[in-house]
Amino acid sequence: IRSYALGKMSGKASLAKNLELLGIQLVDENLKKVLKRVVELGDTKKSMTAADLPIIITDVLETSENQRIELLNCSISSGLNLRATATIHLKIDSKEYLEAGSGNGGYDAFMSAIKKILKKIHLQAPELVDYQIRIPRGGKTNALTEAIITWQVNGKRLQTIGIDSDQVIAAVNSTLKMLNLQLMQKEVAEQ
Image 1 (cartoon, rainbow, N blue to C red):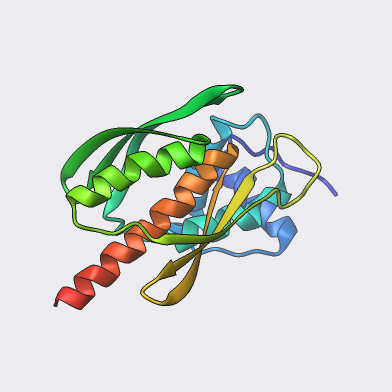
Image 2: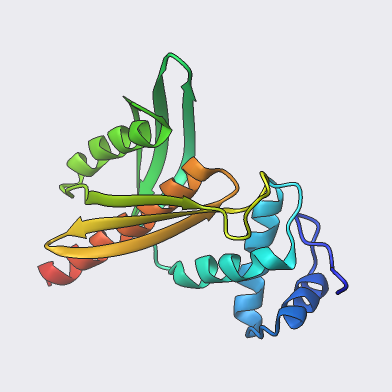
């Protein structure tokens, strides 16, 4: 099977050819969204293959255009015998928030910081029930990583999936999906 390059220098034709090889068809609007995400991921990952495309497509098409919470910047640091720290810069609706937190690992530090912001907007952090990290095509250290997180919210279990080449950022993306969902549900309940 012939492969066509994917990455930050990918063009629409290369992406279309890879999708064709997989038997996947997308409308032009979704093709543009997927291409944008491939280019973004190409900035952080040396190589991508057609095998990465199904998970990228799922992530792009699951993410709503109307996200109320947007991650503007995030710095997470952890190390051996060091307390993990995180600094996050979020935009919720039109207001920006900057907070720092620490924890028992990078993701715990992120959650510590995000909880400070959630308190300011009167939103309770969802309860984490299960957390899985998976490399979809396995075996390679540079593969895209899926973070699959199961949450307990208002007596219901919900699952979100985030992807990135960095597993902690994949978990951050999964968490932001959950928080956006919570904000949407809160808005509906208040109407």
